[in-house]
Length: 231
Image (cartoon, rainbow, N blue to C red; front, side, top):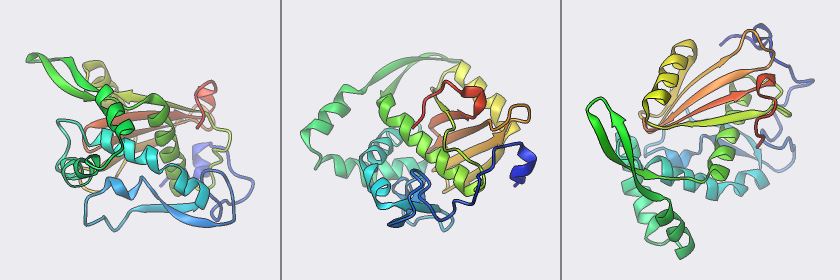
């Protein structure tokens, strides 16, 4: 990995390795999986990332994590890992869900028209509210920043989250960005990601996430995106 000093990013005043990666608390710390281990089929990979996280933060996002898992594994073109999660974890759990969640899922399921080289096709869609997806992705990015660049101070860093739909213009963005970034993955067909920092703007970087080879997000962070949303 490239040293932080060579990336031109803002350094922390002091190491934060023994504090919650989300709120900075130093008491009541547990370990949080980044991304959540519930996204991975059994047996779990041996190289999952864990970070210090206070009990309040660790337990406060379980519903968002579960909703994201439902959404990410619902795609018709998911990897075998995504299909395993849907069949063995998501589908059985929906049978015991409360009616409020089931009604929400029904409202956000449907179909959409997609232009392909072979013509227009109808594909299933499963929506996740932006207010749920964006905080999940920002939390993930903060965790990966702490893991790969522990000296990087993202305390007041703005984040911009974009969901890339399976459309030609979005696929072009994916194809343009990923060759420029460093690649990594956790789990086969579960979580692929690319990362890098801008050389011309202090503190700014980009991450590309691909869940189950189906759900794709691009995250920009740093001074260049000063008006973007914070988690």
